[in-house]
Image (cartoon, rainbow, N blue to C red):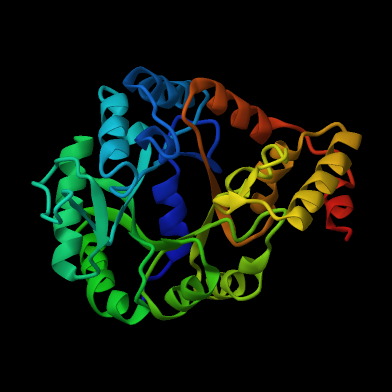
Length: 316
């Protein structure tokens, strides 16, 4: 068992020179998630995050079939390597339309699961080529669909990479919390990333995952803090976990928004800051595709929370 796993993960997440140790930029949107992003906007988004004091960037081969990694690497070129931290992921292979694996460092059309030890090594090699980096700070296993296969194949290979100093911390990222609790309990990992399972609308990660993480000294990174959109702006048709929000979810989000606005705070600011209140959570990652979106969530992270608001938001 690794000692001081929480400390190791936080060290890997936090780089020197930043103002927002607890907030990172999620780079799925600059990989054309949901809509296309120009090269100029992608570079400006990362640049605006750096100017704002953000030093932690989360990407993955799955985001745009390599495009997010490529664009992040280009945007970080020339920035002193010790001045930022990067997380990427393994566990999926980039392939062409016909299913052939792409050449190392190339972009693909889609990704397919690969939880093998060899797949981990090939994936990380390609990530280095796309980003232009010689190391990553956090390496996640991305949405493993078979926990037993991951425990037997991918995770031991990832632990070896950490032991060799190729990566600083390893973990698992998923949008369901029950398997993450098992990984935290059984695997030699430093960090887990939960997406959308500890928000103003969904606290399920606190049931089993967070107690296990605290017991095992595994740091939690909270992503998906807007539940894909409804907690950013609960308008008609707003998405909740990638689908249009059900009427009862939309109603609850609007109730929360009203309570926030009555105290002079936006719902999105409450959503960004809420996960960091839990002792298991070491960082929050927020995605953005434009400089304006970066400036918006930075303002949310800086906003002063009125006394009594959190208890007000706990009310049914």
